[in-house]
Length: 359
Image (cartoon, rainbow, N blue to C red; front, side):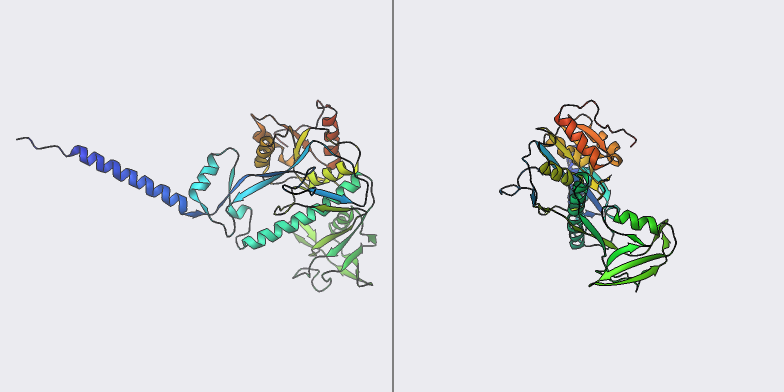
């Protein structure tokens, strides 16, 4: 008598085992944390409009004549999955790798290993506050409006050539006899320090002045005094930014353009929808930022027709704009950005500053 075959049962058992192992693999991938961060497109804010669910302008200006605006000037953000104190699973990292609008990077490429989530939040908030002041300075400089700025010692030096010679809160009035004030204050200090010769600082605290001589030392290929300085601005207008829970310096260019738009007659970009990004300095220089790929995607999804990109971000921005109906404009400074918006308003788009894949 022939014995019944047990091969189908073995096949079923093997199939069940392989399915179970696959399930276990997916489960492990879904819960095991990895030391990576996923950058995603974040919320978009029209800085010419109102804060959501309020009657407050995103940017409020008092102390000067302001004018109605139109269109959209979209400030872009990047969301972050993972990071200090926030675990991310291997599965989420894998999903980020296959998504064209997301970027996966090692955690240490963005944050020091010892930093905490709270410290990251504090740093982002400080950078945003600083960028708002600097954006205001850049906008007023572009408009030819005077303001004053002084350089203050941000904290007591822990080590280096300035240790014991400067104190937190002191104002730097002059370096080597050159006054330190206005939009070029930082450049004045940097230019003198870069000579590598001893520098004489004239300092002021509580109405008392004194001088200290410091010998810059070489660090990371540059001469430095070892003094952390803050810019202390005194503006003729009051500019208030009403966005909460948004950090970092990359909104500086858009904030500056918003201020210019509100302080000049006629909508800067007409009724067009423009988005942009870029950190900015008080003299109007536009600097590269992170997350350009995600910001292009967010701008396009929000209906923006044009994207203002720092030159240093052009290759990534152009790649992200492929197969999207959005025009990338490369900008080096605030004046170029302002001129581009004015050209867009008048439909003079054939000569807009272009990006190239290598810069």
